[in-house]
Image 1: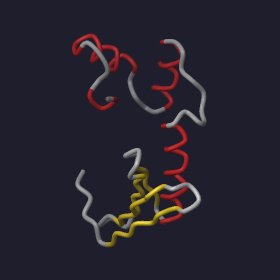
Image 2: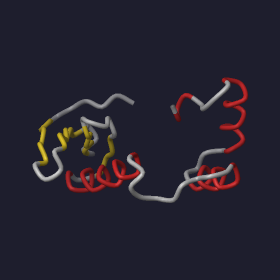
Image 3: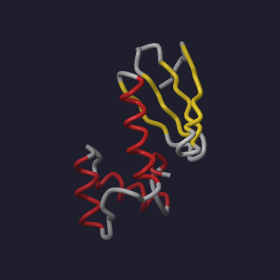
Length: 103
């Protein structure tokens, strides 16, 4: 998917020291990207995108969420995300590691 920017702004969050780039796609959705981590998220409004980004960065940093410690737990999480665990396992077997979309 290609996102065409109609408006971009950068916000230096003084409280956290983060630089966040907001871009509005052609479909009207907003994309927020934390420049330091490379983590991005989206939302229908600027605020939604920023709120979703906060959660995504926290997950990325391991500050929230539950750890997945075994294959059974991983399968449950994948299924909740709508990802077929068998496809993930097959890709790991074929490529000796994580599938490309998870790297």
